[in-house]
Image (cartoon, rainbow, N blue to C red; front, side):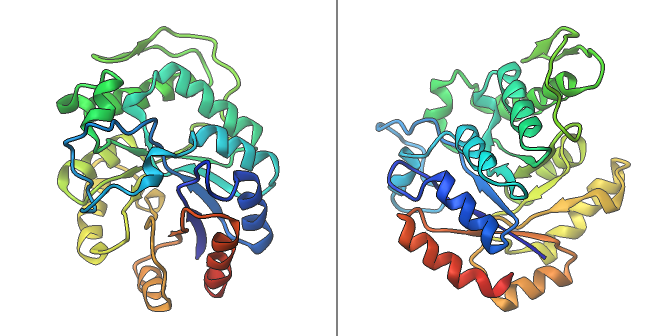
Length: 275
């Protein structure tokens, strides 16, 4: 099983360069980085995990820049967003960022996608909350058009692009696209239509959820072997990883603390037994 990592990198934590080097040297499979552009101080949206919003949410490094630094000092480490708030981006610019990062890293990038939870953050980007899921799906379709081998147009309700010359192309074709979100028919239908798999936070409830996801996948005519399910932000244990393996899971993303270098390295030492 591939063991990747995720962490809120901030201006107060270990740097992307130091972390990436340590991950590759120790044999970890990848680095997934979250995204928040800003956290409005006047906020009524509750933190999904409950309680006070942790301070690292308002200090998060921009993930594509941080991942570019990680790519520059590694050769094998997989690079990913976990997750990118695609509705908050201009999709033409985002397609270029992703294609460039994937091209320069030799095809190591995965786009983890989320719909967002913070209404105030999204509103500052001009996102219409009730239609944000459709906006995400259209932006992904537009980006796939720009990544296509030949000039390809895309026309949607919220995003459009003419058939265009758009290089570089991602090194391995369109990058893998994984959706975050809670289990349910709406999410699973979106994954089957627009994505390559699922990033279930924590990985709880997979035994009950996976049959429904696989059914939606097959109903969409997708190859059953091509579905990627990657439990995300997992607090690992031997028993938990064994259960994931029994379910056919081939990659897990474990959670690192948003901390200075010594604490992060201690966490990597603790996780080494699972490699």
